[in-house]
Amino acid sequence: MSLLLDEIAVAAARLAEAGIDSPRADAELIAAHLHGVSRAGLHLVADTSFEPRFWDDIARRESREPLQHITGLAYFRYLDLEVGPGVFVPRPETEVMTGWAIERLAEMDVTEPVVADLGTGSGAISLAIAQEVPRALVHAVEADPLARQWARRNIARCAAAAPHTAGRVQLHDGDFAAALPELDGAVDLVISNPPYIPLGSWVPPEVGEYDPATALWGGTDGLDAIRAIEGVARRLLRPGGRVAVEHGAVQGAAVYWVFAEEEGWRETRNHQDLAGRDRFVTAMLP
Ligand SMILES: C[S@@+](CC[C@H](N)C(=O)[O-])C[C@H]1O[C@@H](n2cnc3c(N)ncnc32)[C@H](O)[C@@H]1O
Image 1 (cartoon, rainbow, N blue to C red):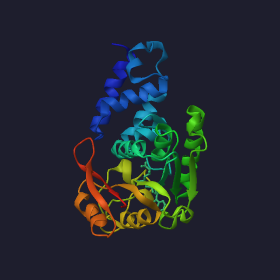
Image 2: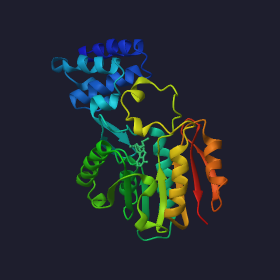
Image 3: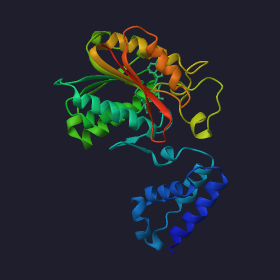
Image 4: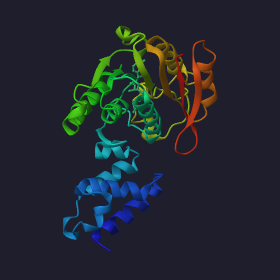
C-alpha cells in the first residue's frame, strides 16, 4: 500500500473516533482535494508527493468543521459551489426537491419560466435550475448579506463554467416575506429551502457551529418561515403555478396542512427524500 493510503487509513480511524459518520470517505475526499485528483485517482498519487497539510485538515474535520468548509466546495446536482463561513452548505435532500421543480418547469408550456427561490443561500437551487432549464429566469432572494456574497461568487463562477446561465439568476436582498412585489401573480414556480428547525432542537456541531443561525431556526415549532412562504407563494404565483417547500423529516403532516387548510391550493402533496423520509411539500394554485 502507498504511504498516502496508509495515512488515509489512520486518518479514517481518527475521524471515526471523533464521531464522524463517513470517516473513510471524508479522509479520502480531503486527500483528493489536496492532491488535486478525484477520489478514484488517489491510488495514482506518488508516495513522494504526500501533502503535509493533510494532517492539519484532518484535525479540522476531527474538531467537526464541515468537510465542505475544509475543501471550500459543495457539490449540488451538476454544480460545484464555493462555500465557507457565513453560508449554509447545500444538502443532498434539497437536490431531490430541485429535481422535482426542474421536471415541472420542463413540462410547462411557457417560453421563459419565471422562478422565485426564497432564501437562496449559496445560490444552489437557483443555479441548478438556471443550468438545467436554460430558458428559466430565476429570482434568488436572500436576507443575509454574508450569504449573498457567496451567492454572488457562485453566480459568477457558474456563468464562467456554463455561459447559458449568465444573466439568468438575479439576486435580490431583503426579507422574502415582502419580496418581489413587481412579480405578483406572474411567477411560474416558487421554491424554498427555508429555516425549519424548531428552536431548542439538538443539531450536530457541523450544523450548529458552522451553518448560519438564520439558515436553521424556524421558531418554536420550526414552521414560522414555511407559513410565511405559503403566503408569499400565493401572492407571487400565476394561476397554475407551483410551489415546493422543504421541511424536516417529522414535519410532513404539519407542512401539508399549512397549505391544505388555506383556501386556494390544489394538489397539495408530500414528497420523500432519497432515504424515504418526508422532505418537501408541493402545491398548485388553481
Ligand atoms: C436552509 S438555508 C437554504 C439555502 C439554500 N437555498 C440551500 O438550499 O442550500 C435558508 C436560507 O434562507 C435565508 N433566509 C432565512 N430567512 C429569510 C428571510 N426571511 N428572507 C430571506 N432569506 C431568508 C437564510 O439566510 C439562508 O441563507
